[in-house]
Image (cartoon, rainbow, N blue to C red; front, side):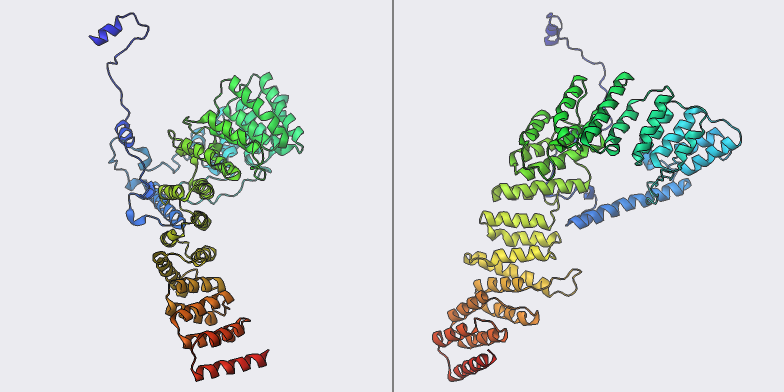
Length: 608
């Protein structure tokens, strides 16, 4: 009744009930996936099938990822090398990528069919040889098939591309007297596609001047370019001109020729223009927005690469913190809440570059906006590979440590690490500085466990900075005892001889551990540390000797006080006379102990 009333109410909006609903094959999986959030305590999803290979460090992440990929590559190699043993298809429905690929040549006679097969299998050298054999046999090759061969050579150069199951051993293509130009020059007939393949190959492999010369030849033969030719030439324009104005004038001339030849620009055209403007200095900043406006006037929606180029024009690496801070805000306001798909290879540059600007300008608010955009739709796919992800999260975490309260930093620490980000030693130093800034040094022993787990316990600067923070001032007894346990754990690492990267004692590390133990009233263990100075050929500081004397005085151990003076004298410390005087005045010494100090005083005076 409700539906009938709607259908016959005269409303302009009509409800049409479909007779059948078509579901995609993975619709149920997508629905289930939408109900599950990411578990920050879990390992990266690529390792969830084998918990034994859960990485603990960035090095292990890289090693395990490569090992996993190596296993897949080995499997592909055997399947593709011995396809006759893998003909049984268990998958329902059929999954082509799990079946052997046809990589061996089936057509052996000299024919166009053989050439087509070699082009389809991307066997560059074999295809060129077959083309030459066809010409030698007097067999003409069709224009379209020759263009297919030119496309193949221009893409890969004169070398066969590496198989997916084999290492890349191809050499850098030589642009002098290469097969693409040789075949092009032998062609009895050439069309726009022929020129386009050659021009794009020249730009791809760095022969920029030759590309423009070939384009001139195209015009002389009364042909016109296509959008792909112009995109390649625009990207090459900064390489063939030196001055900013000359670069821009050449780009404008190419755009005018596109209009004259009635070639419609695409997203990649405008992205190529903006990318070229990044190399035009201040001129780029004056032309960027007119280019964007023209782009919008033609109804072309920008991609993430478009916005990345705009940011690159206004935020140079050396001047990111100076001026133009509103540009990033405007960009984020425009794309906030939007989901993007990959349309340009440079799309993956946006997030890490935007976060670099936030870090340079110390703008935590914009950093949060960038990170929230990452969670919209499937934008996370445009974050790039593991290296780019590490850069992005490293910059984000660095900014958090500088700008946020420690409670917020720790919240993000638990959210990102280790499921998304394995911080390097500098990232952990940033965290230690954040703890110091907000007076939460009591958390250092807990962070030390993570430092060990992530494999940074062999980084001398990080370990010594952590020890220095714990030794700087006294804490409440509970915290001081946890510091002492942590310091002894560090000491054990210094004494291990089977470590791949052993730690070497410095005066700072020895002094810090000793000071921490003294503050925790672990005098005997501190005394053992003092003896390590001699073994490590290091000299204790005068402040440490005074701290030792105060500890000995608290226990009223006259014998240790005398030994302390002897140790100070053995290091030839200038504080030795002062220590001797204090010991004589503040301790109840035996006659033997007084004689020992007197003899020590005499020998010290004689040496002076």
